[in-house]
Image 1 (tube, rainbow, N blue to C red):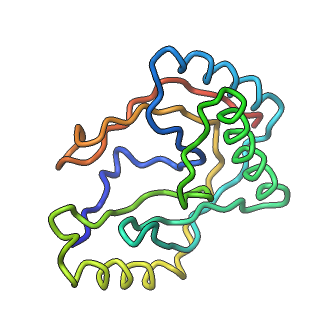
Image 2: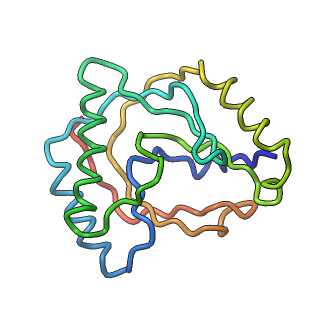
Image 3: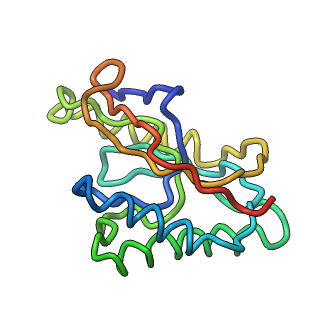
Length: 166
């Protein structure tokens, strides 16, 4: 069975740094701030869907207007480069694209043969989805606490806001 994410916790993921010591966060924030200087806020849109590791349902995030795909790619690359430079390399997971996590197969359902079929059905249904466009104002660095959110989901707390050029 799919466990849908809490809409109040929705965010577009462009990098995932995993577990970092608290002492590394100020350097990460400063480096991100430096790296993002001069980058333009892209017009974005949710488009398509997929799954990670056969357990997580995501909606894709794409640049919508002229130059917006390039702006999004620059943001994505900058976030990765900062992590590598500070030796807090983003985790090497399948998550190699900007995305919005929509649902996960509930832990109790992982042994249920129906769960992968439900996930595959949701991916097919959302594969043709295209949402309205919006302009990203900037990036937010979140600290995630697994299991601390509603219904045992993750809780994401903002650590820093990093503006982009409008």
